[in-house]
Image 1 (cartoon, helix red, strand yellow):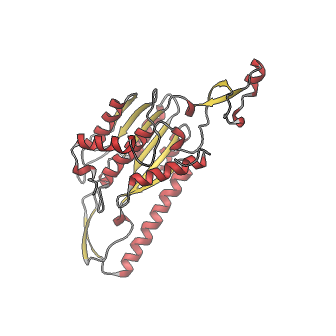
Image 2 (cartoon, one colour):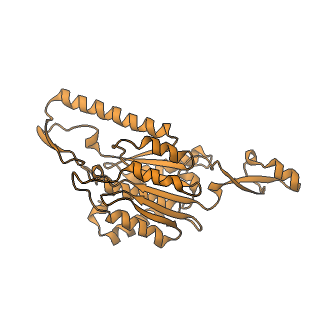
Image 3 (cartoon, one colour):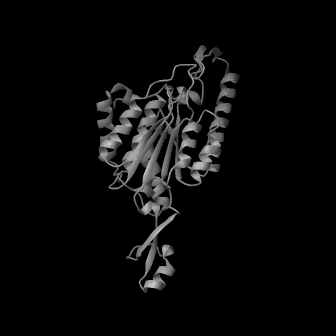
Amino acid sequence: MTPTLSQLTPEQALKHLELLFSRHPHGLLQGDHSSLLPGAGSEVSETRPYVIGDDVRRMDWNATARTTVPHVRLTLADRELTTWIVLDASASMDFGTARMEKRDLAVGAASAVAFLTERAGNRLGAQLTGPYGIRRIPPRTGRRHLLTILRAALDRPRVAPGVPEHTLADALRALRVLPAPGLVAVVSDFLETGWERPLRTVAQRHQVLAVETVDPRELELPDVGMLTVVDPETGRRREVPTHARRLRERYAAAALEQRALIKRSIRRAGAAHLRLRTDRDWVRDVVRYVEDQRRRAGGGAA
């Protein structure tokens, strides 16, 4: 059985993640921006001469008339890409009852975004929330910088119950001052409130991928008798009689509605949505998502 990130030392975890996305048997290609989000980008950057295979819908007729040579419009997605990873490190992420905790799943998702957008000239930055403020890692190029970000994500401290923490909304608001459009990957369980409007603001200027992390116990309660549950944000405890079928049904219905609301809020913000679970093969789910985006963009399966 493949070890989880929490069972490995940080050095082993980094090598494991690098191996997953550098030599994955499903044939994931690195550096393909359009494989993470549908479409080729919307902001026009420059033009270049037409070559066979270019999409004729991107013809720049003004440049063609001016130069008498067919030209096509390039968008920012065709050029160097700046990717920001916003990683939620709130107390609710320190939870997991299946293969791993959500915090480990979040690092895995961040590594997928990092390795899949890495290529010459692309830059990667990060915003990590936590109990000691928001750690901002400025965007730079190179594999060493990529691994530095993942190491910081692996080493981020856990949040003690009742300790004030900076929120996901705070991290998103800090992105309003970015100089140029890029790709923003937000990795969170989205259980806190207040992130909807900041996410919408970010998505107005950037392409946004919201990666939602979920644990199965957040969706339904097992029948295990009297269960003590603890709110990770406040530390409050409560005894729950899980043997009561009606209570389990109400819990499942409320959880289903909560997840549906999160999905609707992400879509209304204009962001793409990927849901990963701690009880599933998250690498396979990322691969399926990438292949689906490629088919939507007309690039075929991986």
